[in-house]
Length: 313
Length: 289
Image (cartoon, rainbow over all chains, first blue to last red; front, side, top):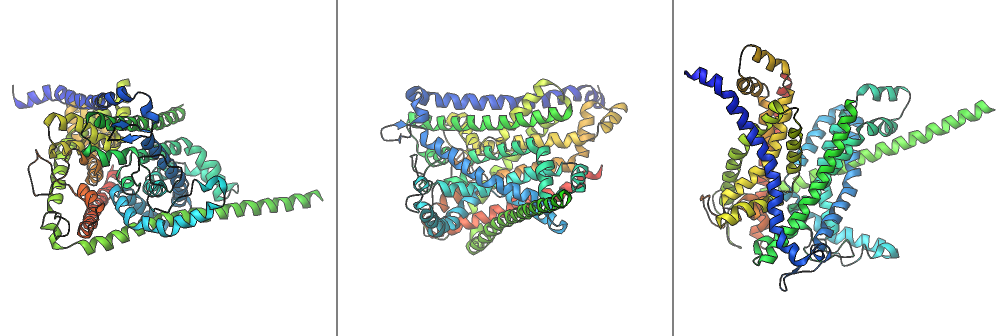
C-alpha cells in the first residue's frame, strides 16, 4: 500500500486512540493522586485515629503528630485573606468595567493580569523583607493599642508585635489572590449584555444601582464560583505563606502570633522527616489539604454547571 | 400639599441615592488605587533590590557558600533544563487530551468527568503534586532527581494546556471542519491541518501561559529535584532551580545570599512577565476568523 493510502486508512484510528488514551489518563492521574496520597497517609491515620484531625501536638521527638494547628492555620489565613480580598477585588472589577475612563482601561486590565502572573515566591520574599517590618513597627502596635481596651477583641489582637504571624500571612495572601479574583470577576461583569445595563441607566438608575440590581444578579453564580476558586488557590498557597507565617506548631489565640499552615509545614519539614510515622503524618496533612481543595473546586464547578443549565433552558 | 411633599420626598430620595452612588464610586476607585499601589510597591522594590544584586557574576558563577561572592548559574541552568523537559513532556499530552475533549468526545458523559478531573487537577496545590511525584518517582528511584522535578512541573502544566486547548479548538467554527470532511479529508487530517492551523495562535498562547506559570513554581521542586549547591547537568541527580534557591537564600541570615535571592527574584519575574506579554501580544490574532 502506498503511504497516502496508509495515511488515509490508519491516521484516523491512530490519532483517535492516541488522543483518547491521553485524555483518559487525566482521569487516572486524579485517581492515582488520591490513591497514592491516601495510601501514604494511611499509617498515620491508623496510629493516631481521629485525634489526628483535632490534636495540635506536633512533636517529632516523641513521634506524636496532630493536624490541628496546620488545619487551623490554613483555614484561618485563607478565611481572613478572602475577607480582605473579595471586597477589594469586587471594587477593582467594578471600577475596571463600569467606572474607568476608557484611556485607562486597557493598561489597568493588563496591569492586573500581570500582577496575577507574578510567582508567589516574589510575594513571599517581598512580604518578608518589606511588609513584615512595616507590620512590626507600625501596623501591629497600632492595632494592639486600638483593640487593647475592647475586652472581647483584645485577645484576638494581642501579643507582642512579631511582624510575622497569621495576620501578616493573611494580608500577603489577600494581596496575592486579589488580582486572580479580580480577573475572574471582570470576565463575568463583561458578559452582562449592554442593552440590559443601558435600559437600567435609561430609567434613571445610578451606577451603583445598576451594579447592585443588574450586574450582580446576572453574574451571581460566576462571581460565587470565582470566589471559590480564589479560596482554593489561597488554601494551597505555599511560598507566599511559608516566609511570613512564623512556623509555630500551635493554635494561637491571637492573630498576631505565629502559626503554621499545611503547605508551610510540608515545605519546611518534609525533607527533614526520617521516621515512617513522621513522613506518613506529613503525607496525611497533604491528603487533608487535597481533600479540602477538591471539595472547594468541586463546589465551584457545581455552581458554574447549575448556572449553565439555567441559562440553557 | 400632597404634590409638594411627594416632590420634596422624591428630591430627598434622589439625594440619598446620589450620595450612596458617590460613596460607592469613591470606594471602588480607592480599591483600585490600593490594588495598583501594591503592584507598584512590589515591582519597585523588586527592581531596586534586584538590580543592586545583579552583576555579571550572577550569570557566570555557581551558588556560593555564605559570605562569599558567587552567582546563580547552576540554578538558572537547572531551572531552564527542567522547564524545557516539562514543556517537552507536558505540551503533547496537554494538546492531545485537549483535542480529544474538543473534537471527539464533545457530548459523551464521560468527557464531562474528564473535564471535572482536569478542573480539580488545575486547582490542586503545587505542593501536593510535589508530594505525589515524591511518592511515585522519588521513592521508586531511591533518590531525588531533576527528572522527577521535570515531571512534577509537567503535571502542573498539563491541566492548564488541556483547558486552553479545548477552549481554543472549540472556537474554530464547525463549518470549516465540515467543509474539509466534505472534500474527503480523514478526521485526523481535518483536526491536524484545519483546526490546529486555525487555532494556532490561541494554542501557542495557552502553552506560553502554562510555561509562565511553571517557571516560577518552587513548591513542587522542593522534594523532587531538591537542590544542589554545585554545577551539574546530570538529570538523574538533585538539581538546583532558581525558585528553590531563592527560597533557601531569602530565609537565610547571610547578606550575600539575600542579595542573590533578590537578583534571582528579579530574573524570574522578568522571565514570567516577558512570557506573559508575548502570550498576550499573540492573542489578538485569533479574531482573524
